[in-house]
Length: 234
Length: 265
Image (cartoon, rainbow over all chains, first blue to last red; front, top):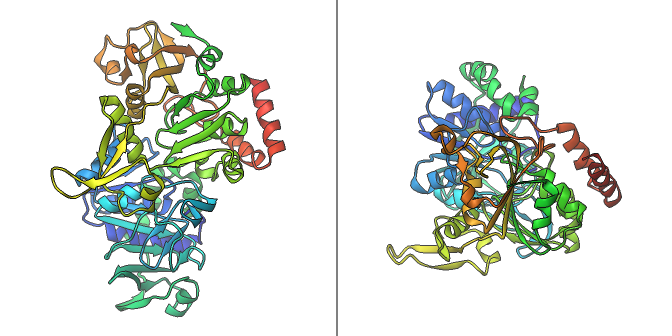
């Protein structure tokens, strides 16, 4: 499943810290299917923000405020009531485009994944779409996706288990690398060429306060929706 | 008004378009079992907006000609194995969609109009896979626009906690079932229990109730959503689901697994 192959817990914690910082100050954050790391990050941001942002986790009964069925999330997004969402993909490319559908030529795929879900729509309507992959490698991070489920835009973030990128002038640039990595190791593990952003450096770790939230109230919600993931972090 | 799951399955003819809830919403596995038993063929499934175990079982049993969906999977257990095999063999056609396009298509059907405009999506290669979608400027703003056609399934089939003797069905917050019932020509439901109470007599219940106006038949089927589970009642049978995901990888073990499931129920 895209985004679901799990890295070492320490690296997942770094990813959670990065994403939680990106969500600070936002009003409403939604988390879709198969997104345990973003779910944890959004809940950490909510706890540190004293209840803000509001977090809607699809598939959760305890952290899901929607009462109008499956369409409500999408209606929210089109109206501008949703500030952030998360996407992964079987492939993510140098422009930040994601492919959730399959490998091969569009219309003549040789391998098919689960499908597009809401990505083609949400990617163009939600102001802060954060891309994530927990298995950064040359087959997942490619120069060009086989199928554009959703195109990228400048300003979009990509957070992986090795590094953080942000798109500028049409391509992803390396913003930071996690402890244990260097720009060289990240480059060797990435299927597209990239420049390093000015001021790039090592990714800050998960703050103590955030780690405390993760062990407390956040873990309780994670156990409901992503029990295997919660066990891995514990 | 009350019926059996087998009678519901008998109402759905071969070749029908059948809308099915995703695994989190309300799955009438009790009726899926009967559709397989009766050897249904040529069904066209519509995901609300995605498909899960129900679709994979029907595909494994050779009941399905095509699907329209935003995704098909076994959730955390990964790809739907029988679908994946049928797709590779070209035995099942896929009308690729995205969640909001399905909601919009159903909303158009609900309103009795031919189509609805949809925000976003333009820029995705998905648009190129849908010759039935229309691109053109929005007549009010002049901005690029996308129109998606109405989706009017022949049947909606789902499972819910409570129905009443008049055929009203309580779905709580699972409002995609309300939308789909408004959009579908005919709605068939299994329920855990049939209450003596009139669900429309109390606003607390009525607000989450599909009126009998939209519901053709209700069958009582305790544990009718097992092994997928039903919100607020019982959870998924994770061991069963994992065993299916494993067995369904190969045609022979898949058939043996489903045969055993049919014998048990």
